[in-house]
Image 1 (cartoon, rainbow, N blue to C red):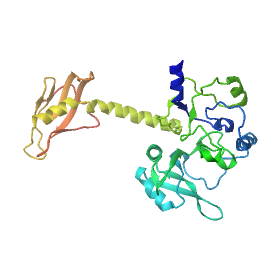
Image 2 (image 1 turned 180 degrees about the horizontal axis):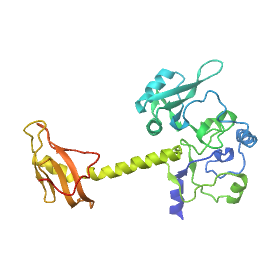
Image 3 (image 1 turned 135 degrees about the horizontal axis):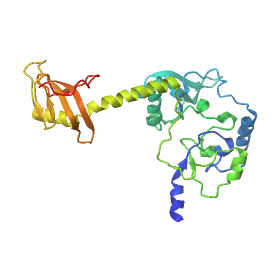
Image 4 (image 1 turned 45 degrees about the vertical axis):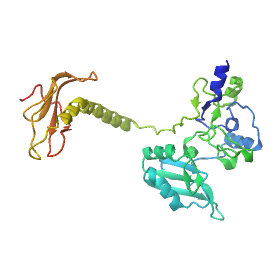
Length: 319
């Protein structure tokens, strides 16, 4: 029992949907608002007073956009763009400013060209220093997290302890695994997401941001590219042969000349400079069958394979 309790202390979980009462709870099991701000956020949520897509300033692809918080008030669009450019090509950047004074409010939204670049920034830019300020990086919860209520309406995530309005479930302050009994019935009645009992994460694991759902056409194209990659991987598994060529240190007499070599007992190079393997078994257990790979040797260079797209061309060597 004590071992299970100790494991729970080091376990956390993250909110996939936003509920104001749950966000105000350190372990995600509260059933009553504990402060006026949570109560205000709950009223906004129930009455549908907040529209996350109603802000005309919000532009771009949310799956390629990160939220950057805890920015220094001295940080400008130029310095932020420079800091974010190390993770990918910045397509759009919006530093949120006060509507009257124009001063920075300490957070921004940065859109990258691709989702891969966004994920790189999401993982690597978190807790990095920009203008001597340690920043917080998260995905665009405003548009991607169901039920989201912003901080100005009593919601949001994280916050400072001295403010007395901490919000849990996000990347900076995840929910702790409950140490007390969970009121399952009350949580279900209030529509509060249930803790993922038995599927907690370590506090050192990085939660993954939501992924964009592919259309049927995109899924088909992805499947085609994956199949093509798997087909070509048969050719790239000739590691042993490549190593043996390099060890033999065979040199060509002219830049374009192809030489005939024998490598091992089961793989060979024909007179035309092509590998052929008759039902050859790779050391990793892969049956290669009859596969041809052209080898081009250049002056003062070790032999390296040159692969064709159509590499399955015959059933024997032409030596």
